[in-house]
Image (cartoon, rainbow, N blue to C red):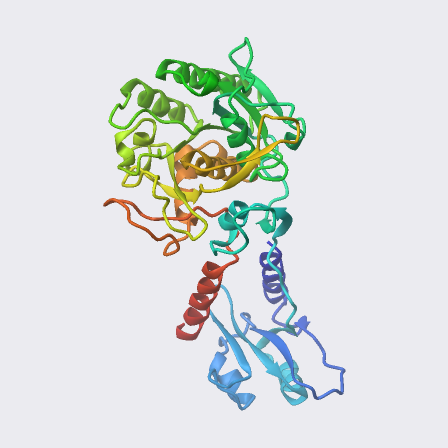
Length: 430
């Protein structure tokens, strides 16, 4: 955003300069220092004959290939270049009517915030690179929206949630059933912590609603569908009341392999149709994710977002289901998160159950940032896949699997470096 603002400001200067006074955006060089300094030059679009980049550079006795010409800008919106200009260059440029904007190049930073002392999984969904350590809190989480999911509702359809855990910061509440959604197993609390706890979570300002469909760690498709029903009803009521930011259901659960439930899958599809985002675990059978529910409703086969697991080395976990029903992968091995042994308890767990809530958290994060995405599960699913990193995940998968590593849209690792190289190449060939 900072870059966009600066760019728009430059364009505004160029476009605001009337023909009779084309020098408005030109810095006058009163410095006698002949030390070369990097300047940004935008050509004046108001000239009767549009100036050519090559001719301006030629007046400076330069070409696009000169070592002190850094960037060439050549598109339908603006044209120009950046150059390491000495005193002679700066004087010439300031006198040219063909130059609309001339200013010293300024340092820009990504509009990214950081939170240190986090587990490796949080760093992985922002950089893609396999840094940090497997155990401990020595990694850095980077994000570009300080709302961090504020106001978004995350329904943890699982074993319940230990709402008194201090790392939830008072944002966790029991939802369904009315008799109580206390977690006596620990799984649901761990999942909730990955999605939205203060230290271990992605969307650390989102609301956490415990939905206990698997009391003690087991249940039936009917109890899970009951949990979905509660989430959709609450979503509809908040929408009616005008208090809805967005709703996402997180399900880190699965039927036994080969025992799919059509009613379960239909309920998932209906929830998505009602405007509720649904994120599901791919399952831990090491087989085709399309062979279990609710993962069969994901990938290219349905509207849910199904998530497989990777380990610390960015390789698909041996236990993770794969195939065309998987949308993306996320960290799922040796993941530390909140637990039920006390208000500050933690535990390390592994499974696609741990991978799914990373994506749940990203969905909540995006719902708070983009109201349009919040109300459009199909667009959100497309956003998740379009922002995922390609060529990062390794391992053996079934045909139809895209092998995408989920990313929160703040890719500052190898993927960002590659993107910068592509932009530079495009500028040279333009």
